[in-house]
Length: 90
Image (cartoon, rainbow, N blue to C red; front, top):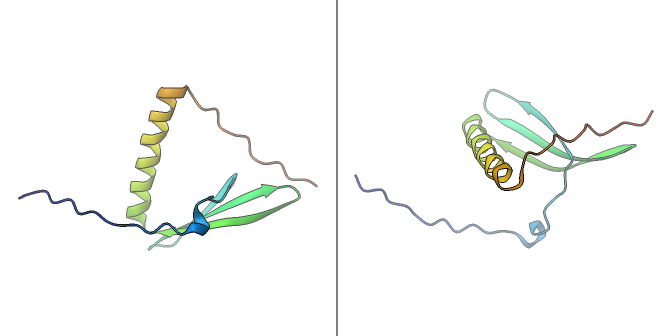
């Protein structure tokens, strides 16, 4: 069987070109989907900057891609130290 790769054209809305900054994330799930909320925490407040909803199978592929890219990055630039959790003000 011949491997046929098809080009998929993806529209990238101009409003997303700058991206959304996030320094925290929460994850919830149901049986059918994972919900990833990306947040910008700047005490004393925080706000959700993006929400991504995906299937368990796609999330697994995303995690594998992230791990592969993290390994490539660290091989080129050295180990990354985990960031500290944002502090909350009382």
